Structure formats: structure tokens, C-alpha cells
Length: 131
Image (tube, rainbow, N blue to C red):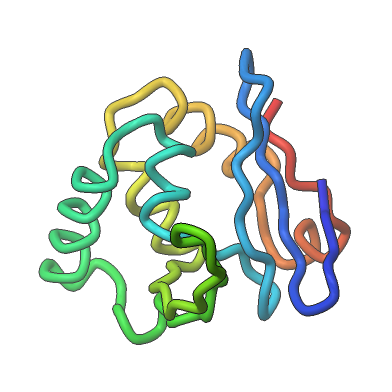
């Protein structure tokens, strides 16, 4: 499902058997997710995601500069809204982590990406739902 707001577009992934969706950013014809969003998507801890990302970049599997971007995110801290630069990872990085994470949700996501061949044209149409 593609959700638009005034400045950015979000895609909501809903995994099989789950009611709550995980919001990821749609930008530059790719999806982008923070470590926290990936941890929700793959049903594991943010620390686990961080470890996998470190190993992926250290091994040279993908280029960190080509697959990451700092994006300003507004979050509530106490009673005030604060803008923080958060590191987001594109679809290449998300899929690389998905191959390393040992969870049913990660397997579902990887299978869905392979089955639907999630590419730019699919994202442009806003057809990103895990079923």
C-alpha cells in the first residue's frame, strides 16, 4: 500500500498472519528502511540487523555509500517533536540482510521479492504488499 504525505511517500508491508504493517520510505524509485524498521520487518533485534549490516559492508557484498542515506525523521521525545538524521538502507541492503536473518518473516519477504520481482516499475505502481 502506498501512503502519501506532504513531503514523502511510505509503503506499508503487511506480513502473512500479521495485522500491523511496517512502514518503509519510498524514495528515488527504491524502498528505504531504518535498522529499526528492518528489525520489525524481519522479526529480530535492531542489534542483530546492525551486526548483519556491518558484516555485509565489511565483506564488500554491497557498497555502503550506494545503499545508505541519512534522512531527517521527526520523532517525539517527551513532549516535543525533534528532527533527527537517521540512517536508512535501500532495497539492496534490505534484501542482503534478509538473506542473513534466520526468521520466517525474512524468508517470506525474500520469497515475495523474488516471486514478484520487486523492481522499480512495481514500486512506482505502489504494489508492495507481502501476502
